[in-house]
Length: 290
Ligand SMILES: C[C@@](CO)(OP(=O)(O)O)[C@H](O)COP(=O)(O)OP(=O)(O)OC[C@H]1O[C@@H](n2ccc(N)nc2=O)[C@H](O)[C@@H]1O
Ligand SMILES: Nc1ncnc2c1ncn2[C@@H]1O[C@H](COP(=O)(O)OP(=O)(O)O)[C@@H](O)[C@H]1O
Image (cartoon, rainbow, N blue to C red; front, side, top):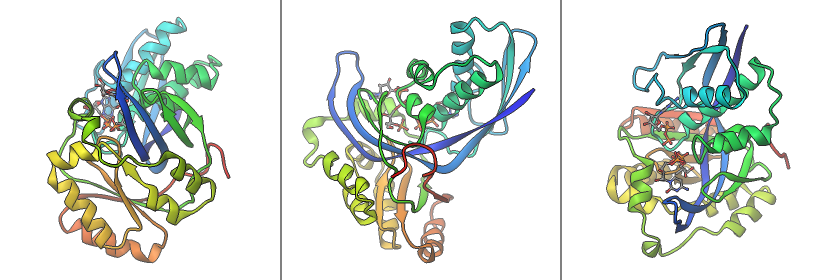
């Protein structure tokens, strides 16, 4: 039997870092939501005890470093599954981009293998398993829109933000999440984003409010290291995006746009100097709906 599972990219509408913890991770407050730019996983049961990963993308690991491999190994070990699986990853999400592509693949593998092997694992338990693979994996398991705290694994579902267009642009640099957190200095942040105001804007369904409250303290590190990310933000705003922010640790910049008529100008303007530009919708169907 073959099954398919979609693995959408996430964006952080708000990302605040509160402090560094004893375990080396950072305590965060984030508002995360999904966008309609997705990898697709094809999963097929193998009678022999093996995990085999393939992908059309030449630039990701296909061995045990692959997060989908790690998800399959974890679920097999934890639920004593003797069968194997062949997973093909059709990658569309740019890698090491701040869009949680690897984490979403891991989450999709957990959801898919739960179905393929008929394990009946409840979503909360899948989410806990996901936390063993990475801080962003639990959110990718549940999807929707959520307030994420702790190191990102504690989730509270919230209403979806007002639906809009999302323009994503990834400059040709690879950013390491560990490196960005490693360079982050809380004392250097002059103004933290306001979580209560962002939550109010989302609850009120105010697109303008959401655009005004966008904020990510990790920009302080990544924009200093890579001035081209700052330039990209400025260009997107100049071209007419309503609100602009870097996603996660970067380097992808996203622009929220309410009017379809503005998209061509923004896309064409960005494509003049940035090869990877995507125009997608915010994914507002799953999760809690206002
Ligand atoms: C910044 C964010 C925002 O959503 O996303 P990305 O830019 O990676 O997409 C996340 O916090 C990234 O989550 P994720 O990519 O799952 O990170 P993990 O694999 O758990 O951790 C990678 C490394 O980042 C650092 N890390 C991660 C999360 C956190 N709350 N504090 C940290 O200090 C640690 O050094 C850790 O070793
Ligand atoms: N299935 C996967 N897809 C993409 N990257 C993966 C995958 N499995 C492991 N990786 C590795 O994870 C790292 C981070 O990738 P990704 O999740 O795309 O970035 P980010 O956390 O910035 O959104 C990359 O260095 C990549 O080699």
